Image (cartoon, rainbow, N blue to C red; front, side, top):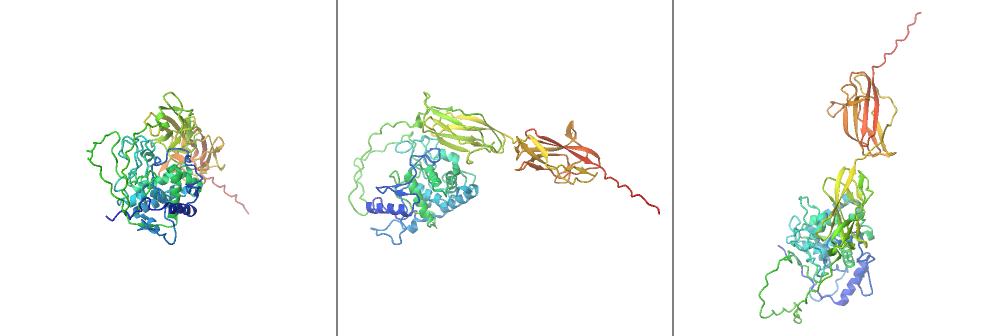
Length: 572
């Protein structure tokens, strides 16, 4: 295999002056919406502590560390450097072939399913660069799956978020705490609902760049955000990782990739150097679970002498052993004992309508005290319903307010009728949730009228000239998509199907006297197929009924054509 990465610039090689100049220039030329403060730090109008998506769920990554390297400046002549530069602008703009293909296919998919989102593939590339260095330089197989797992640090509260295990170690190999997984760095609890099958292999694998890129795109496009709008773009990026510095870095790479990029072979992409947690970001496989003690190694009688840094210089000092771990203050989530209903009303709606009530719960301590700033997840359970939350999602995560209350987005009923469950759980805790039953009733009509007053007549063995058309309404409004049935009945008092008289024809030309599974159109109109008559003469009845009880009986007449009277004869 070819070498994965080119030569990398050592930390500290860029002087403070050069670094400051680079940030200032980059802010002025490459990052829309980015400015610098008096110390040269990048800022935006967004608040790092805000929760712009309204859920405050710590983002797709659980606010895990990320690469902080900025793109190179687009200057025509490279600035002088000492030694061999790590990468050039042209090399840094290269994206591994499979990774680039995944970004573009995800963006194409979103342009079809959520065209109003206006997701650029360059945004996925910018996030992929910041999260994993483009899957660690394109270290993926032909199917797009990372050759070695890419895992973030253990989210145990020691310098990071405290997120207890939510997947039994299925994705991250850790059954005690969660870790961000894969090239787009999803935490397991987010992947569980946001995961996608981007390559059509029937699996949702966070370690596959096609699956992860499509999931990231859908994640960024929720809440009806329009990413061509700067405010919505900022909100979407902050929802991925809630940090202003993260936002600035992603925006810088987005603008850089928009100015031009190219494909490079898998495994040859450049790897970022600096990370927000000051580590090298090289974690690629699960570490032992904190609950499983490792076997201590035998200490060496003499500590090994540190190797001098490359390029000369003095010997690096021996690291100072870490001090004792101080007790940590429990997070709000850790203090939650149970969920309580917060006044949720009866959840009912007609198919296609928005529910009038919203699910609301309150997080409480064992003593019944409300807990603010806790993530609560609302999930529409099962595949027996096509109802969604506003925005088309089946999962929503909302942060509790100062009263400890979290209210789910409004439910929107689909076309499937019946009951379904909305489940509420506390993110990051294994607590008994609350289930709410919601009901969707069929669309209804209470009135049916013909759209024409023309008499419906036919001769024996002939066909009726006019087709029957009716209009359905409910409470005076158009009743669209209402189910209806049309039957040729025996009499006004006997609604059983007639065995003679007028009839419809099926696709094979056979006689049919009952039509089921009819539906009114968007204007509440229903036009029946053509009617035919057998040789029986008389008056017959056609009855049309709809969901909701609307009924209309139409009279049909079959009679022989009148014989014209002979003209009187005259005599001369």
